[in-house]
Length: 149
Image 1 (cartoon, rainbow, N blue to C red):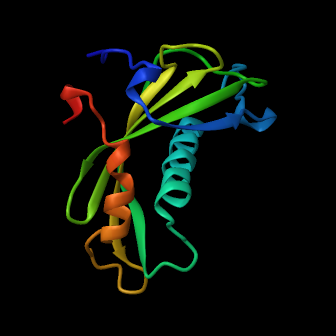
Image 2 (cartoon, rainbow, N blue to C red; image 1 turned 90 degrees about the vertical axis):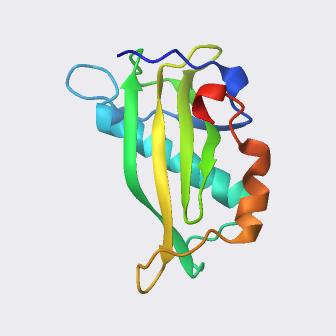
């Protein structure tokens, strides 16, 4: 089932990305696995820029345990895109990100999906609670989309 197409208004954080020559596949468009790297980069940028997360030093790290993507329009090099990020849900040890990729100056998503991070102890890899400082910093980015509540 095709999901409702997301719009820019549904996101408060945007991460700009310049597609690269190497992103294109033999068919002349961005390869599907590359969309996931865009999602991962944008989700981590939100954590680092807005929640002060330091992935190289933090005793807790977020591991991706699930991800999805719906491809709605082709992307290709050279193209500037922006990845919109919203927090769909903040659990005890997990974050569910709502993400969408927008072509430059377009209001409708070219791709959209989810990434689930579970926070674990860096050494033991045991689940651990999301730090309160991150939880509080992400509140302004919670999704207002009732379908994602």
